[in-house]
Length: 260
Image (tube, rainbow, N blue to C red; front, side, top):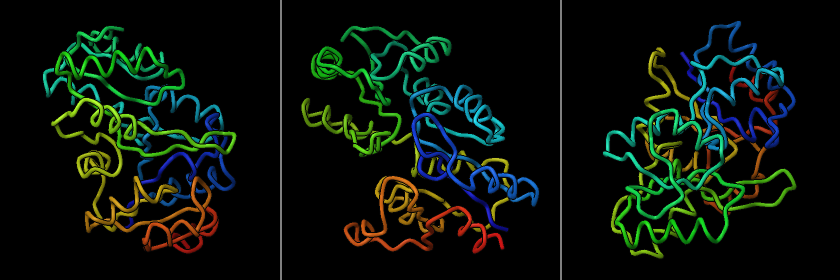
């Protein structure tokens, strides 16, 4: 039996307003009607998972919260496992509220146990100064919610992902710790996504060659499906020296090939 792990941005939705791409609604309905096991797996760290699911349903994509996973669902468990209670957040206000509701002390101060890095559209000099000082002066842990390198914005331009900001902090402070990967394509995240599903042939469907597909291929047990509907065109495969198991230009094409 096929099992699908489906990226959100660039596969099901085409912008930060979560507007569905052509065929997304029909694709999800077909998976549901044919009882094909799937999870939507996203590295989106702008909002808590429950908020994203609510917005996606408002946009016409019928998604259950139990079928939706982001690193923010895993983050509280991870912070508790490494003994972090106080933290400085590089992230949006909704994520700050979410972490406070989960019982963490989120402060705008360098005297913390960890710097947590999510997507932050208000990132400024002061936040970066506090983050560097927390790591350099206080020995704070650097905890990115994912190791995403680059993110495409709605205007077609790009900005650094959480992983790139984390690497900058690591370099600036000579940080010796390992950077965790709480998102795709870490094996821990993918195994968490597959919990409760009957294991079969697992397919990861994504528009992200570098963050998702190359890493998933290295695991050796996932079939990689590249969608050209997001941040990269087919030409990028040559630059990356990467050959996915499948490449599709639309969800309709994917459906006819893998579900036909």
